[in-house]
Image 1 (cartoon, helix red, strand yellow):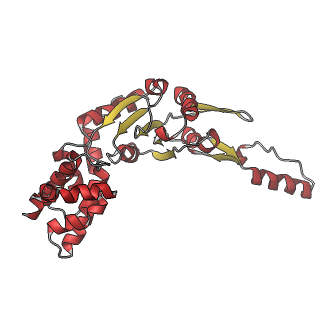
Image 2 (cartoon, helix red, strand yellow; image 1 turned 90 degrees about the vertical axis):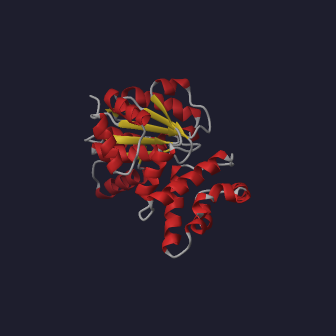
Image 3 (cartoon, one colour; image 1 turned 90 degrees about the horizontal axis):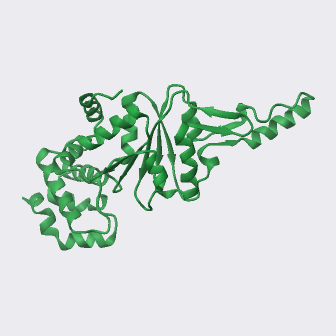
Length: 288
């Protein structure tokens, strides 16, 4: 059943996450249909944060699998606790007791995917930055996502009692396989419109006035339009607003506060020089 649109919008906003219409619809459909939600977009636009607030809204545990190059099944699914097995074996030998079942559940180390399947009340499973994982791991995920079950050779099949709500994120460092995309509901998160970005930074930076928020968001959008090496995302806008507010409250003029805390927004030398070259264009409103 679809989550009521207005209710979801309000619940997310109360948790200071301001989703646009497209994202609200994607989340509602993914939850209702039980399909993984694949989110792509520039870094820092709120892809990961969606899963955090959604878990809170649904009252589910958030379980995160951070992907990286070289991640394998044992790091994502389960491992046997070999030291514990060895200690149990030696203890049985010393006591003259029966050797325990070394493949009992007590010796399983749960990793995020198995933990999500076993969550009694269901979980929100975040598979973060899937584009960093190898193609082989992506292929393994197909089986997991198809039926929300896995097979442990020594003990049998584990099936989710309550299928997890799955959110995958990608920064598009490489193209994902079509087979994975077919199993997901895809949504691209763009940079927000200025009005929504103002609402976000005002909510996340206490003490920021509406006028200062508008000036800051204008400056952010000017910088994005200059073609920097890395276009700043919402996360950087929020950090910049919080830093500038802290300096402003300490007595620094607003325009100078923005300049002094610019390192929270742009992260490399080329972009710092680019902003300095266009200082008047970027900070005109803030210097008024």
